[in-house]
Length: 324
Image 1: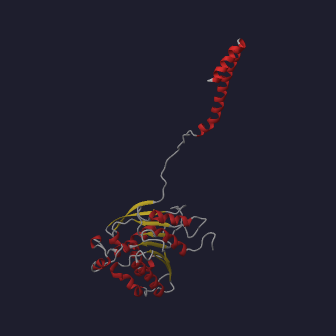
Image 2: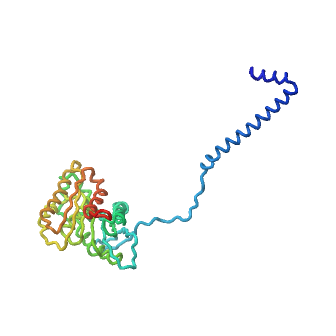
């Protein structure tokens, strides 16, 4: 306030010159404010401009295709089955190339199809080239407990294991399911998609039980078996107990078997059964069966399939494009 009074007194004392000085100062302040505003606007404009959203021109939206789904009528099963198929990059139905086929028992879109097909595709990339480009076939489940279990006289063994018998209203259908694989699905894939070379089957838990039955009773049906934490407790371990005798059957061709066991402390029984299957194959399988046993102590029964399948491919096909 004192400064303002002093300024006013000064202008009065200066008289006419003071009026001119006051006017000059007013114009100076006005021009200065405009210059400062212009400088501020200039400095802030780039920041403002870059924060504005530039519309992105969308040219075309289309599906990202990963595979084929189709329904296959089955006389062996007396029902239709949904089959999911992933074809390798570069697949051409008009050429003469044929492909190995990898069959996934729990192969529904909401089951194991996508992530196992992804592992296969990853290993098929030319800079990895772990094994040849392959067709992946996922079989969607209808009644898993029925299809993956073999016939038993009764379900009393479930009481001992703490399972509810009511959870198995239908069971014992594995013979029909194996017939479906052998007589319908495998020939269909060979004819329709040129899948006539090596065949691999992948199964976990009850599907691992089914894969083990195929291995012991229909060994030549597949070249490679990936068996993950198999439910060999079914039927009082009947299949595991029969393994030494079943393995006496002559082997028509060399095969490879991968067996994975989850953390022992989670389920000692299933750990012992997977280990027992490995020991039976090692002791009675002969030189024509190459066995890979994989204990995964960091995985549970519910989490192991992805790691196990990756490990299985790595063990069965140890060489890559840059590792020989």
